Structure formats: C-alpha cells, structure tokens
Length: 79
Image (cartoon, rainbow, N blue to C red; front, side):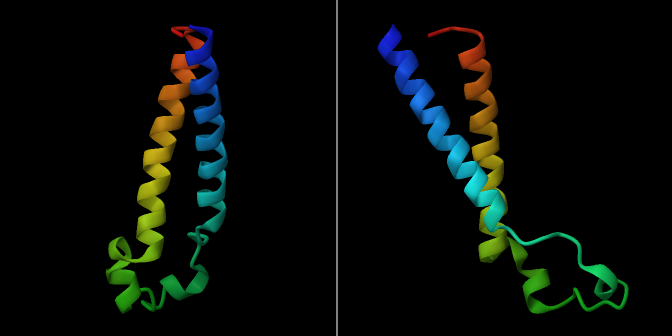
C-alpha cells in the first residue's frame, strides 16, 4: 500500500509542476482600452478555442481537475 501512495504522490508532484508551467505560458486576460474600441473582434479573437491559447486553457482545466481530485485522495489517506 505504501508503494501506491508513493507513486500517487510522485504523479501529484508532476501534475503540480505541469499545471504551474501551463499557467505561466498563458497570456494575460486584460486587454486594456483596446476592448472598448472593438479591436478584440479579430480572427484570433473569434477562433480562440482552436488556437494555442485555447488549447492551454483546456489543458489548464483538465490538469486543475486532476490536481484537485488527487489532492483530496491523498488527504483522505485512501492509499
């Protein structure tokens, strides 16, 4: 049982490091005054879900969910 806990802890640390790196790779969400003038309605603004930024947002959500589930499992001492 102790071996499973060590493996889960190592995977938890890897997920935490990956989550930190993905969050740091994302651009800031504040667009300043350009949002008031309608400049945000460009091709990249409309297709953000298919771009690299959209992929980073999806990966962040998945890694965040995995991180939370693993943190709860490790804290409940199921392993």
